[in-house]
Image (cartoon, rainbow, N blue to C red; front, side, top):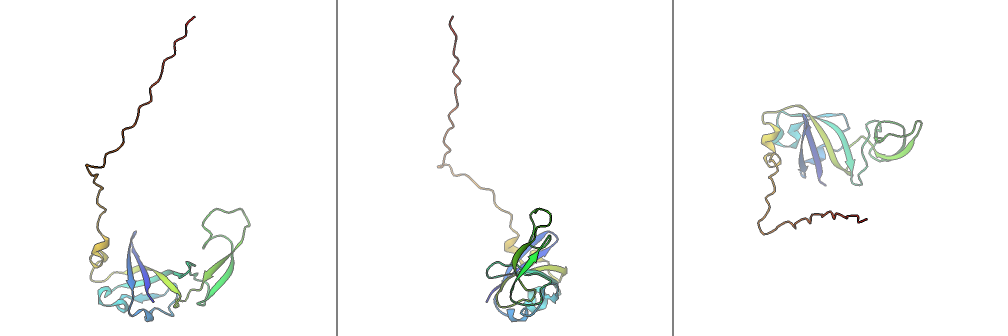
Length: 156
């Protein structure tokens, strides 16, 4: 089982796949703080907070549900109800519990305390600026035909 970690810090996010040693995260809850040392030596000194999860079917994890299973919950405004709705509308949504299980695929983390190395140093391949597209000389654009206005003269 592979966890996809989304680590965010001050408006920038980095992605990491955790293949080995991910059993440590099973049983943790949304809102818990964890040390970065459990991911290996590269996150030494980091303190991270679990802010959200998603399971293999894409259902989000909700903080108020103390289980690992899928739950159908009647919701009003707020979590999982982002769009504007008519007043008084309630919808039943399928949600995953707040406890991380084997069905969890994605874990969202927020940096509380940074370590010795910055995240830019840990993820150099994700910091590259997108290169501007260079048009090839052989690929020419088709000329756009100009519309000609015809003048119609009236004869009396």
